[in-house]
Structures are given as structure tokens and as C-alpha cells.
Length: 301
Figure 1 (cartoon, rainbow, N blue to C red):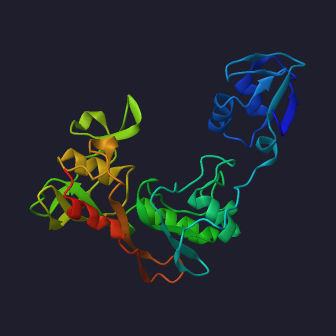
Figure 2 (figure 1 turned 135 degrees about the vertical axis):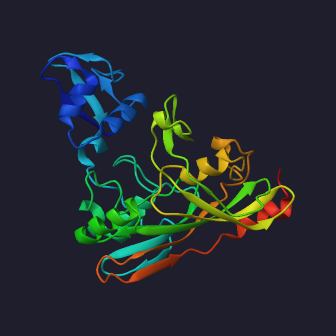
Figure 3 (figure 1 turned 180 degrees about the vertical axis):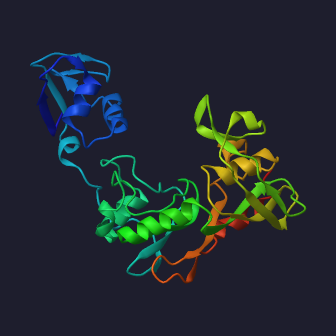
């Protein structure tokens, strides 16, 4: 393994526990990933996270796992700035780009771009992987993404976006015909057997986080409807799960029952919130991608 760093074991135990102690800045998730990728060796042999190590064993890990403790910077990523002042920024997240990094070795995320564009964000949140972002968008979702540049702005905006202090408007194209405006307000929880997805909860005894999604139709074809959606505090996959639960999954959302399409047709159109310094109401908008006309031109089913 090239560019490796060697660590000597001083006490017997599981490999993953040794690595967690030797590399306290690295998350357990990152350490598991590196081991799963075949990038950890014990005495020259590949080793999984559950391997047993003994005093004197030599553990080889990627050099950057030891030395890299900040996000990699990528100033050349395509993430246009929509708004910027001394306290906050907003950018236009492209479809297909993750919002935050999973670990310090990650790249190609909005956070990697922000680490280059706004280096002061590197210490705003514990973990340093979000680069000041105060909310997230799914990788497949495009549109407005907001972050902070100072500790006070970060604290204020996190509170606003985590509660009812920010209103987010989305545009989606869904399968089927929605004839009238409506509200989906069932709680949402992670699926116990499938953590990649969430589910709406109709039995109060099963828990779930409160979530309200308001929608109204804008344009219809024989097989699809363009809808405007408004939410306040957001739960993971809230819009996707709510629309699928009423029989109208978003076009391209295979995770929630839609047929394949060139992209997930969900876009964060605008966000409105109080400025963390002046208190004035701020609205930031992102242009709707031209691709959102495609489901009507092709009449996908």
C-alpha cells in the first residue's frame, strides 16, 4: 500500500478499537470505511475492522488518515453563489452533488467547495464536515442551500432552520394528476429495516417526527403534475416520502417507488428567514432548472 503510515500496537484488542484510540480525530464511520475498502493492513496482510491485534503488531493505514484533519478544498466545483454578506451565504447546489462530506478524505461535495471559498467556516460546527451549512439537501435535489460565516450567525441560523424560523419553497414534478392543493402532515421516521429510507407513520404508537408538507398543483399533463411545495422545519426525505405516501412519487425517485428518469425532479426554489444580524426578512431564490419541462414534453408514465 503506497503512501501508508505505520502504527505500532501497544495493547491487545480489536483493530477498530485500536484505530479509534490511535486516530481520535477520525470518525468510527471513516475507520470502518477505510477497512472495508481494503486500505488497512496488519503486519502486511489485509485486515477487517474486527481483526484482533497484539502488542508489537504493525498496522498500516493511508497516510492521509493520520495527517488530514480538515476538509479538502475544491474551489473549482460548480456551486454558484446566490447571496453573500459578512454573516452568511447561500449557493445554488447542483443536482448530484452531496451537501456535506462524510469524512475528511471525501471530495466533490458542497462542503469541499465551501472550505475553499469560505475557510472561516472550518471551525463553526463540531466535526468540521459541513463547512458552515445550516441545513442540507439530498444529493439528488438541487437548489438553495444556506450557510453561516460566523459563530453567532451559525447558532442563530441553525436554530431557525431547525425549528419554524425558516420557510422553504420547492418545486417538484410528480407522477399522476393532483387536482387541488393539499397538506400531508403524517409523522416520519427512519425505516427500522432500511435506514436508507424513511416512512410515514399512521400509528401514533410507532413514534416519528412531526412533519407538514403543503402542496398545490401548477401544471398537469396526462401523467404528471408540477407542484409547488412549502415546508418549515424539514425531516429527512420529508417531501419525497409524503408525496409518495399519497400516491404521487416524485418523477425519478426510484427510492420511493417512481420509475427511472434522468434526475430527481425536486428543486429547492427559495428560502425565507430572518437575517441573523439585522433581523430583516431575507428571501433567496434559485432559478428553476430547464430540465423541469422534460416530463411534460415526454409525458413520462
